[in-house]
Length: 73
Image 1 (cartoon, rainbow, N blue to C red):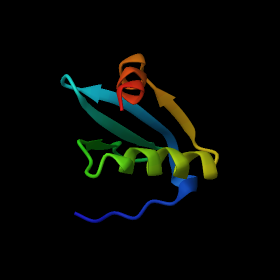
Image 2: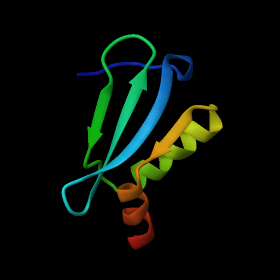
Image 3: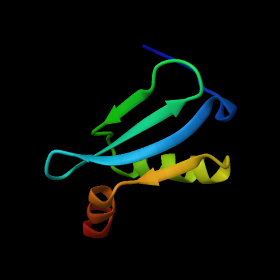
């Protein structure tokens, strides 16, 4: 399924951990269903998503578990 989102439609990017060692992200939109992104490949995709959020002034929230995974990589 393909969906186009513009930065103005995104409220927050939330990064969390799934399982023991996998990262996940949730795109929280202003209206509609939030979009889960679990186990993206390559792992650098999460870095690109964070960079996108920073470039477009989107709120970025990282859980403590996610920050632990970032330090491990």
